[in-house]
Amino acid sequence: MKLSGKIFTAVAASAILLSASAGLRGNMPAGLQTAASDSASQQKVEAPVNEASVIDEVIWVVGDEPILKSEVENMRMQAEADGVRWSGDPDCSIPEQIAVQKLFMHQAAIDSIEVSESEITQSVEQQINWWIQNTGGNREKVEEYFNKSITQLRIDLHDDFRDRQVIEKMRNKLVEDINVSPADVRNYFKDLPEDSIPFVPTEVEVQIITRQPRITPEEVNRVKDQLREYTDRVTSGETSFATLARLYSEDPGTARQGGELDYTGRGLLDPAFANVAFNLTDPKKISKIVETEFGFHIIQLIDKRGDKIKCRHILLKPRVSEEAVEQAKQKLDSLANDLREGKFTFEEAASYVSDDKDTRSNHGVMTNTSDQQLTSRFRMQDLPTEIARAVDTMKVGEISAPFQMVNSKGKEVCVIAKLKNRVEGHRATITEDFQVMKNVVLAKRREEHLRDWVKNKLKEIYVRMNDRYKDCKFEYQGWVK
Image 1 (tube, helix red, strand yellow):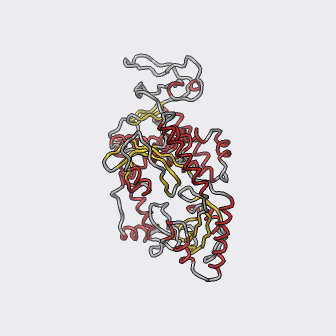
Image 2 (cartoon, one colour; image 1 turned 30 degrees about the horizontal axis):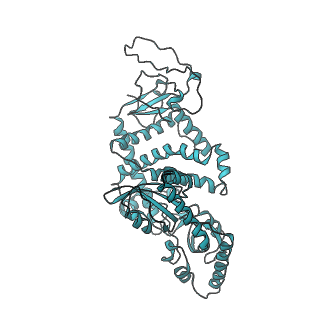
Image 3 (cartoon, one colour; image 1 turned 90 degrees about the horizontal axis):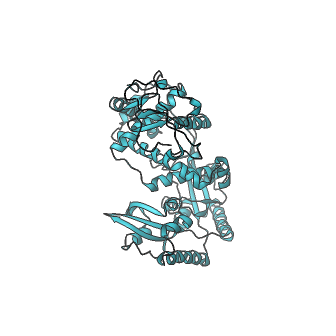
């Protein structure tokens, strides 16, 4: 939570009582007043503040970024929930950690580092979807646990995820030129004891063949008729495109923003979507219905800027019937039996039969991009849940029974999986795990660079903290001016 308005620069130890208009939720008792005084004359002696009466308090200011007591308490509670143990006194370590984040936020503002609304929304949706998956796909359980609706969770997470992404972008910019050579990696590890060598967890390579259950023409027509109705309602002036997108679009990344996609280049959009969107010229008109791998869309132009477009869209996805799912599973079951009997190879079947274009050209082999590098190896926790469950107890070369899952495009598909390879957990070696060892050295170099940057930044930035923190043993020197 942040204070609105200008940052107070009152004398140290001044407590700021926040009214409801300053951002606190709920009804606050009438008559709350700010306890901070502007003692410019330095002659008045402030009366001690009753801690019990303080609703929230600015305890540090870093640059023009305040740190609130509530922020510290929220981080403390989150750490306790996650089982995090602090190396020092939490009353000192937690506000210092937040203060370091504020340094990056301050620099990001100077360097005009920004994140788009679509990036924030995508990250929020990924977090919420992760919670839902870990409750067995039960949205109601998530809402019950947090005592909030999914919509309210999206709102509450928005600012936090925006700040996280800004900080991450700023950190990446500061270390983008830091790199290490193979010689650096060998020199770093050559004298380390064995128990200091990184342990590589069990990794697997998986091949998949997917079949998308057939959608009936009647269902496709239902979706198209619905989109035509939306077009008529906007064209007649009955409602706005953004309102309908918020209410009905099935794209979770943009629905909350009225279907809006921020300025985006053609290469980042589905080709069919891009062809229609970039041909729009009149913001008052709505596109024809567009089919992509995600479903069916209608699009409204907002603006064009150079080779980028800003637009809104509504996505609807045809529903898959249980009968169609069973038919797809039966076909895959028959295919799996043929593969086990050696009638043809999994690679051949994946290349000619699979509906998954991301793996079809790679003989069905899945590609892992979770660590920002392309590899065919996955840790079990990095695989989609349904695939990890299927291959967990399989032997190398075995083929699973058909199962159902939602793919990365949000579509229901039926899958058979083959465990291509399993590499048991082991200590890393230069010959087998060079990239793992390089990442360790690179991370250390970059972290050292960031630590040096923080030390230098502290020499030039304004910092004010309440007196009770000035005797803390901080990780970084220079907080106390």
